[in-house]
Length: 160
Image (cartoon, rainbow, N blue to C red):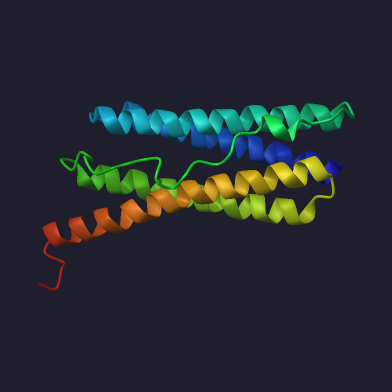
């Protein structure tokens, strides 16, 4: 049980870091649509913290954890960035690059945690969070590739 609680505590810290990062990104953008998107992502990270805290309490008090209360991970199509503010592409590219690193670290962490813990509700929540963070990663990765190509082209790095 100690290993499970350690994973939960680390997960809470990671989710708080993600929450704060997306809030900072929202505060640093002029684009209203991007601000809303970053705040939605921050809210998702906040929900993850609450779920993890509830899981910690249930394990600590030896009570049941309600996995049915957990929402399904978002669809990779949830965020449409076709009207992305490209006035500051280096800033957006930087934000997306950092988000990719955070989300990748998160889904890898949850994958490892779900494989190593024995407590079934923790194992299941970690699997759900792995899928959730992988969805975030996929969302950012797709757009990051487009932004990067745009940036390279504008900088004269493209081979044409």
